[in-house]
Structures are given as C-alpha cells and as structure tokens.
Image 1 (tube, rainbow, N blue to C red):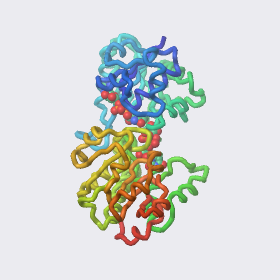
Image 2: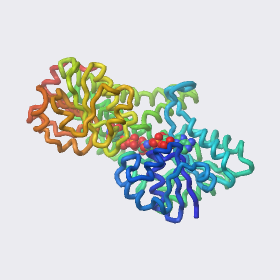
Image 3: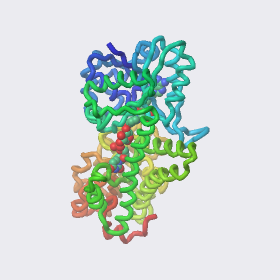
Image 4: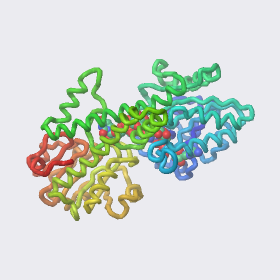
Amino acid sequence: MVKICCLGAGYVGGPTMAVIALKCPDIQVVVVDITKSRIDAWNSDTLPIYEPGLDEVVKQCRGKNLFFSNDIEKHVSEADIIFVSVNTPTKTRGLGAGKAADLTYWESAARMIADVAKSDKIVVEKSTVPVKTAEAIEKILTHNSNGINFQILSNPEFLAEGTAIQDLFNPDRVLIGGRETPEGQKAVQTLKAVYAHWVPEDQILTTNLWSAELSKLAANAFLAQRISSVNAMSALCEATGANVSEVSYAVGKDSRIGPKFLNASVGFGGSCFQKDILNLVYICECNGLPEVANYWKQVIKINDYQKSRFVNRVVSSMFNTVANKKIAVLGFAFKKDTGDTRETPAIDVCKGLLGDKAKISIYDPQVTEDQIQRDPTTTKQVSVTWDAYEATKDAHGICIMTEWDEFKTLDYKKIYDSMQKPAFVFDGRNVVDSEKLREIGFIVYSIGKPLDGWLKDMPAVA
Ligand code: NAD
Ligand code: UDX
C-alpha cells in the first residue's frame, strides 16, 4: 500500500488529502500538523474548517485510510510521498518584508524530513511558493541525505474555498512539475498515478519544476487582475450612469474573455490573492524587472482603492459622519460558504468606519465572535451577533460584505421598520434587489450601479 503523509492540516491539506483518501482506497493518507488543537478538531465531529461537502468525505474515510495525527516524525519516516502544505504567509520583517513569501515553515518542514527519513521519498510542494523554491528545498534535503534519494515535485493546488470539494472532485487541471531526469520523471508518473484514480489523464499536466511553481502565482495574479479590472470599471460606471453588471455581462459574452470572475465587489480578500501577487512582485524586482513588478502591483492598488472608496461612500452618504452611528455589517468572511476571514475586505471596511467612530454590529453565519475579536483592529470596538435582525436593529446603515445566499431573502421590510431613518444599505456584493429595497424606503448603494438621487447629491467620492 502506497503511504502518503501531508504536513499541514489546514484549508488545503485537510480537504485535499480527504479527497485523495476517498478516491484512492488503496492508499493510506495521514495528515499531520504541529498544532495539536487542529488535529484534535479533525478527529472530532466539529472539523476545524467549514467547507460544503467536507464532513461527508471525512466521515467516509476517517479511520479507514485517512488519519489525522500529531506524530509527525513517525508518519514522515513511513511515507513514500510527502505533501508539504504548510502556510507560506507574506514576510512581516527582514529582507523582502511586506512582499516576499515567508518560507520559515517550509524550511523547517524540509529539515525535519531530511532528519527523519530512512528511505527514498517523493516530496511534493503543495503550498504556493516562489519560483525556484524546489532548488532550495533540494539543497536542504540532499545536504543531509545519508544516501537517501529525494525527488521534489511541484503540485500547486488550485481549489477555491467554499467550493473546495467540488474543485477537488472535478479539477480544471492537475499540474505536476518535476526534474527532467529519469528519476524526476518516474516521480512525476508516481504522483500522476494517484490523481489518475479520478482525474482524466489529459487533465493532468506535467511540466518542469519552475513552470509549475510559476503557473500557480500566474493563475492567481490573472484571476485577481480580472476582479481589479471589473472593480476599476465599477468606479467609472458610478461616475457615468453605466451599470457594471450589464457591462461585465456584455464583456464576458466575448468567448475570448469569458463570463466568470467578473463580479464587481468591495474588493477581493482571502489568504491567497494579495500574498501571491506581492510575492510575484518581489520575484520580478529580484529578477531586475521593475516594469513587470509595477504592472502587477496595480492589481493590489486598485483593490485597496475599491475598499477605501466603499468606506468613503458610506461616510459621505451619511452626512459626512458616522460617529456614534450604529452600522450593521452583514458578512465577515472573505466570500460565501467559508468561515475564513483571512484578508477579508470586511476588516478594512470596519477599520475605516471605526476610524470615523462608528459603532459596528457584525453578523456572519459562519464566523464566531472569538474569531472577529482576535483581529487587533476590531477588538472591543465591535459587537457580534448571531442574527441579522439583531445586528440591524436601531442601525443607521447596513454594509453587506459577504454574498451569503441568506442575505438575499432577509425580511427587509422588518429590518427597515427597526432601523433609524433615513435607512441606508451599502451593498458591497450586489446581492440585494435594490429596486425592491428602494420601494420599502431604503437609500441603496450598489457597487457600480446607477446612483440614487440621494447619493448623487452627496459630495464626490475620492
Ligand atoms: P493554513 O494556515 O490553513 O494551514 C497550514 C497548516 O500548516 C497549519 O495548520 C500549520 O499549523 C501547519 N504547519 C506549519 N508548519 C508545519 C510543519 N513544519 N509541520 C506540520 N504542520 C505545519 O494554510 P492553507 O490555507 O491550508 O494554505 C497552505 C498553503 O497552500 C499556502 O502556501 C497557501 O498559499 C496554499 N494555498 C491555499 C489555498 C486556500 O484556498 N487556502 C489554495 C491554494 C493554495
Ligand atoms: C483563490 C483562487 O480562486 C484559487 O484557484 C486558489 O487556489 C486560491 O485563491 P479563494 O481565494 O479561495 O481562491 O476564492 P476565490 O473564489 O478566488 O475568491 C477570492 C476573492 O475574490 C473573494 O473575496 C471573492 O469574493 C472575490 N471575488 C471573486 C470577486 O470579488 N469577484 C469575482 O468575480 C470573484
């Protein structure tokens, strides 16, 4: 039986390995982590992450060929294939701070593998890493190898949170990069055979190591760029009376452009886009390509602009001050169907409103009070409720930050009646029916849509 060990039981390691275990009953999969509470949660009835469909997959395989453990060294030493799916956040200090990827966790994982391995291993980069990381990892592994053969593969993960299980069941492609040596190609084929249990062979792409590493950064940069492009258009739509939904529909009908990922929003969030673009920018700068670096930097600048434009719109619409006004924030996760709040635009919007002394009441169906209070910017200055009606009671305005389906079907008449007047809705995700809300009496702002008379009369937004 082939044995797989995955280092890192997070948003990628957990779901990815659960699906491999489900699809490959002949393979034993053990997911390990340095955080004991995370492993305990994976072994409990309340998994550490919320992801539609994940519970069912885990329940089907846990204890059969899927295991979660803190005994890292034992399982690494027994494994044939080791996936490394540890976090690679942006560096906060030292060389490249604010841009470069922090590979501390990766490096310590590689050193541990080198220390405990007693047989040949295939080590798979699952984390998103800078191009050429495999070279550094190879050096760490082979430096201490004691005659053991390590093959490094790059197998970046393309799942999106909220649809992870669906994405893993039916990936657009699986990408495997390896050395162009006979041993490297043999390792590529071994990993390909794992995915071939359920992914059609023509969707399993094989490349050299550097192409695989770079393709992941490139894919995220292209995706984020589409959002910044449509968000840039949303500002122009508001200024001209065009409707961004109509514009993106018309643009997306061009088969060369395509309809997906063109929804204007308060800005993209999540742990990947900003981090990976900053990393790409840093790599470009290190390779003497400042023009290319500046090109990608703009994607983040527009995203920051979109978030501050939203805050300015809220404040300017409400007579240029939100001091002591209750603002209900509906949705705190960075997108629907996840409880993840990493880099969520809601944090920046709350920060902006708190800067103007607003009183904020937050409701998100999957985000706990503890999780929100842990963010240093929101601590003690916000209240968190478990009910949208409670959050909006006596509020002057509502900011919709996440496109949760339930926000489409709230009883907005009941909400309107319980609010201060004039009652405002600022829809950062274009989820509500603005016309219906206007009929009730709300003043409604929807990103990139023609403005209410009220909003038009307010001072221009920078
Ligand atoms: P995460 O923070 O949820 O999980 C990482 C886990 O690794 C943590 O539980 C941490 O305790 C553990 N860890 C750190 N060092 C370890 C070590 N030496 N041994 C064992 N465990 C260790 O992160 P994530 O969201 O799963 O992302 C992991 C990687 O995958 C990142 O590089 C990310 O960029 C990439 N990625 C993420 C997504 C996503 O949607 N979240 C999608 C594609 C790729
Ligand atoms: C992203 C990539 O999609 C995925 O391939 C990669 O593996 C990890 O990074 P994720 O961040 O989980 O996935 O979610 P995604 O669906 O890409 O959304 C990212 C952000 O963009 C969210 O805040 C979302 O609301 C926003 N978004 C997305 C828009 O504002 N408009 C869109 O049209 C699409």
